[in-house]
Image (cartoon, rainbow, N blue to C red; front, side, top):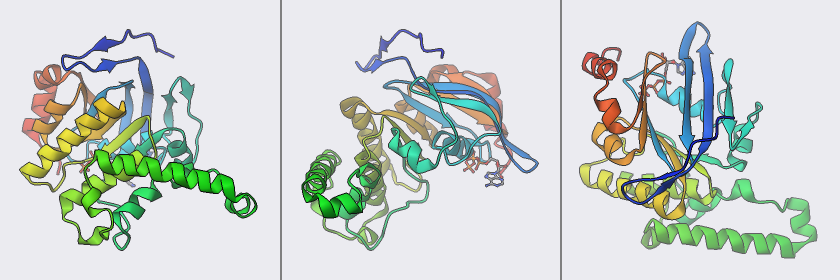
Length: 272
Ligand SMILES: Nc1ncnc2c1ncn2[C@@H]1O[C@H](COP(=O)(O)OP(=O)(O)OP(=O)(O)O)[C@@H](O)[C@H]1O
């Protein structure tokens, strides 16, 4: 695979490595609708990569291809140097990709702690039978899961609400709990579907900081869809721009900002 890029250090001191995820000539159709038209781009190790574009451009479809929820009719998905075979999304998760959702998908009646614990479920290796036969292994696993979850809860500063049912939390905190749950799976690549949607300015600032900290301190590579242009340009190392299922721009925030086709697509902000 094309994995030969040299690593480099960003202005803020983070190291960006070689290709982690490589999407090659992806085409995705729903009946007669081509949601993604022959798109290629990559995500590099340690990078924050954004996918932007007007409504209906195909961003969510692309995220769903990366997460394994949709299998494209054409093209290849390469992850960590291996071509992905069609597999169930939970297997993709087990292989190092986790995600958050645009509309929060938490268990409202369960506490924050229990919700974050569900992020570990994919990782539980001791099945029911071995749990019954060999309690020690299951217990050790449970302890490891707890430790990991507690570390994330500390990291995202949600200790004070760990016993609170998620349904009682304000929107911004729910989004943070969702981030915590995704991180509990210890992903190499974290997919964020509009992490700032519906947030006020303060909540957006908080979320931006947590995303940067997750990337920097946990070393998690991040691909995100986001509508808030200011946030995208501040957070991202590189940006892919989609419009009507096509890729019309790809580069650093500055490159994308000065790309005439991108400017036209946004000024046109046509197809809602
Ligand atoms: N499950 C589906 N069945 C049929 N058509 C779909 C499906 N999902 C998406 N589409 C179509 O594919 C195109 C791209 O949609 P997609 O949701 O990926 O865009 P988007 O850029 O994420 O939009 P938004 O910013 O509004 O969320 C649209 O024309 C949409 O109607």
